Image (cartoon, rainbow, N blue to C red; front, side):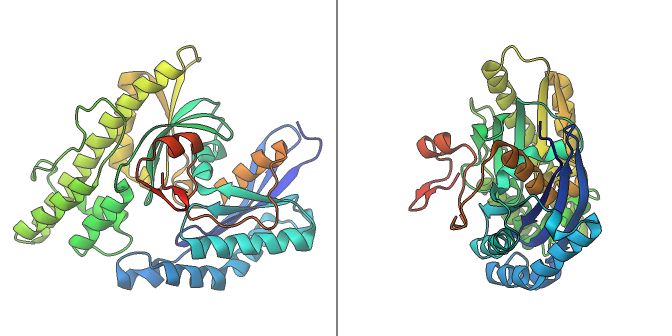
Length: 366
């Protein structure tokens, strides 16, 4: 346990939210969120129906200094009070990651404090601990716009992938469904809202990997089936609502079945722990239907469900600052010449030997 409070500035810029937050870890181990600022880029990307990397990078550069200043002001601290600077250094859209990481490097040099290079996925993995204690180990479903993974979170920096998408992420499937039916951007909330008006049994859609003896996901075929269903429909508001509801039901079914398999694998890995915990994190974790289906599964399988508050499900800097505190205490400081990384799997060994979605020149994709 540290003797003095640790005050960390976290910076997040991996996709289309420019975010900064300040957390304090007191000498008794309590963590306080002093500020958390998130600037959305929805208006910039809405005309294009999705995130445009070049626009995102430019928006980060325009907003990031103001957002950091606001986080410091809202926290009631001075820059000189900061113990270290934590920033997402991957994975993500490389232009955005560079914008945030360069700001962090500049502050680290100017203030003479350590730089902490944080994996964006690790931020999500630890995010439930922003609200309540969540002891290791636990089973994590990380489900966002770019990632759908099931991991055994054994400790800080110790992650074992139990399953991953072999093609597209669940969030991509939501976004594609929204684009096909011209529901606007961001797509996930638009599909969820429309699904409330539809019949989830109206359209027959596939459940990829149903019955398979593994915990991997696939959503490419489901995306294609939705597009074909819409093309064949009369495109009325009712038809759109039925397709949205049927799609969301299919995603819920896939999530619960694949997670059920991961729960078996997790129990085999950890036969003697005191209580089994299941964590859902990432932007898609804000979907109410998905949460409810996973809550039912946890009740049936004897797991306790933990999730971050809704405001910390999507990309945010509080989770980056939290990961930064943990790495600061371990002394995991980054050199100032550390590079931004478009790819950075959490489970490095599993990703190296069993890449779920290919292996490129820069390493495993996932």
